[in-house]
Image (cartoon, rainbow, N blue to C red):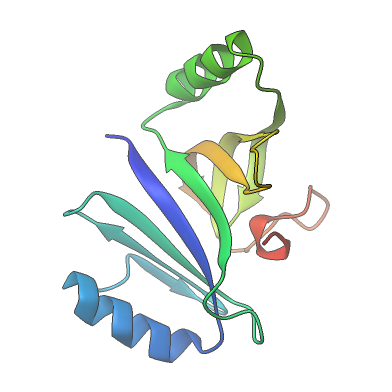
Length: 138
């Protein structure tokens, strides 16, 4: 199943978890220091909360979570055929998950979109020696 991801910067993670748990009628799927995500069934949504004091209420980035690496590859090829370039990140660690993904370049308003699949859970937010994770985006 594919679903849209909305990653929000929040000032207070605990208050935001309480609000979104009530709004969507579900508890977070994952909570870590400065981070939470919700796998909302209806509407299909991956809601990510990134604690960034002073940036609360703003969009950090957007994404499409897809079921597998083959779909990541197919979407990257499809978008390339339409002239959209991408930045490849395979085997990266971001948001407490090992992922294969790419970032779409060239959105007309500068918004950041990623297309990704989760390969495994991770005990760390980002790889120590890898590329910068999404928390610095926004």
